[in-house]
Length: 453
Image (tube, rainbow, N blue to C red; front, side):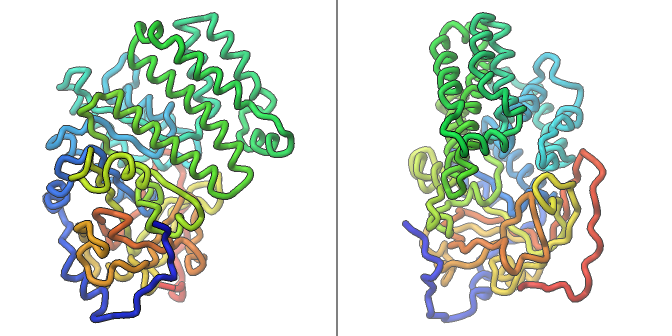
């Protein structure tokens, strides 16, 4: 399906907020998640979104859902929108591996790539300590993992491959150093590499492909040293290959680099599912723009795909089909958020503009009377809510945010019940609590700050 935001119906038997008022369920305590847990049923892939990258309640509610899925339905791992090397250190700590750190706060504080607050925050500390405590009672095969799906860690992943080979095959390590030396002129600057490949018809693609192939050729031998150790090394070699492609295509603009990134995340998710066995179950934490099916937003018109779409297409559109997939979106009407004013800028605790008039957030605010709510959609075109089969503006805030510019951006036309299977609405939210300090606190917004525009 190609999404067309102009395809709006004109029949309006009653206001949409009236329809929504009958559909929403209260969301005050973890027990109120019962209908969602029941709806997930035997789904193998549960993808949990967020409308921002810096909102505390999105992390805490995803934690509550994840705990219940692990305890009640035997889910095997959590995979997040984070770098593999950093998240693998968290995985080692959560599984009580040797020399893996003394606390979750110590391990997470080592996340130094901007935006650090996405995973180096106290909300994630609580989750990781819970995972570690949960795993302490389990065998190694039963322990729940924590992994990163993203593709940004080009130099860190190359270093991890060399470090692994230094230990298991010094001759291969020398070959890896020679291959990866192709990147030396760029001084670990991905932007510099991207610009260079745009200006000159050359790249380090062949070197990264060769190293992944060489590692896999020796897989039977290397696995004897440890199945998880080889899997980690192989994943880092795969990241090096896909990161090279990502940065090379990023400089050209368009949908290609976005698609490279999301295809990589799905490939990693599938690898993790295979690594954990045919009965494994996966929880994914990513932004709504990744986990909500792109076919039902204007992303489709731009030639973009995303994780939610690809996982649905590969594993079933509804939990009753094949392995089963559940996509759960999150949103908020107002509050504070951690973000930067530009890429790489210091983190700020900013005030969000209230959801603009007619947006999904505004409709839910009106329908709920300003309280938190859960919506479950029934799989039909309108999700069981009359008139919800038409596109509505749905807010998305990334790591860069300008509250005063929301009237011109930050909203994605969305057919909500087709993009998601369920939705958690937190009317007023608060900024996540970062480990790295200080946080700049934005001045109070003036009374005249535009609302709902």
